[in-house]
Length: 509
Image (cartoon, rainbow, N blue to C red):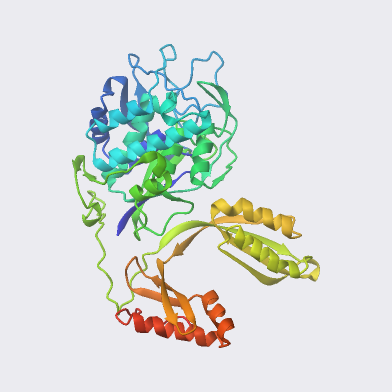
């Protein structure tokens, strides 16, 4: 079973909160200190942890303390005070609740550029996965900063990613995830926060511009929890949007452990990041996720393993079992299912948006047009249900299922083409079996056949000739649609006699 981790972020996400959750989950602080020391920045900071209480709950707080002789000492950021604050005689009335501000503001603030940070990481001899993930996170943040400022990533003066504590937070988080053997990371929806925050370029609204851009880049689900503070920092947003496979509810998993990482202040909710760790069905790996979502900026990452403070190169990380002391996590490859047995589904999961509206005063003739317009806009499915509405009026419930990035387009169509005054929408998770298309030749013409499998290349779960192809041939030939459908199914079986459906399954008719 694959090892999963889930970031639950009721009060937001910041780099030092990630470190705290990882240390609380068992990653040795001494291991982080030793590995981070390879970056050559040890004279600039000190790393320590302590147990603290937030609203009566105990959690681990990790402090990245910048030393007075270091450069850069202050860790101000142009797009929100991820760590520290600028020299400012007017104290910020809305400080970041997830970070310390006890830095000496009398020293010069330093900057680093992306190539310099990449060189630091690449020369540090870190575990291969930790190195690849760290580079990916910085490149993701660089892309967001560049988009905000309207310049190429290489030209950005990185107060943001150049600050020592941001480097420690990002690289330390990647080291911790690698040490735990986490293969797939998921993240909850993120709170927006509110108010303003002082940064190197003045006071900025919350969410900070870089955070907003990172959310936009990954279509992250967001909401307001009523707390007007900077809750998600650019560093935290970059970690999540780069490494998380999906955002939303937790994935199916067997929970073994929870790590609790504390923010700096007490809030109306416990200011704690909760890191769930367990086992579940294999999903897209961290490497695959960051490559898929940020390929243009990240380049090709490399796989490897780190166990208990030692780096081990592994050319095939998916074939090696992982084990963490005291928690008995294992990850082993599954044997291919026998064609005659029912295999455990290796379903992919993805976020999907569901839009709903009730209608009782729309001409029924408009419904067909609305369906076509919604499908043209990218809807995955559209359907109606008969319902009884207020004042005993018969009506319909119109439901649209679409990718999250198509919500605005589909919602616009609903408002423009129907009489609705309101549309409800929710983000849900759906499981999808791998599928492929084959083509069979009949006397009347070609028919595509959809084949679903329990796993990629595994046993077949279902077979279905495509409706449109069957309908087209039925209209041309004058034969019943069901005859074309059945003939296509039979022909597929003749061409693939070496393949069989799992026990208990039969082809759809």
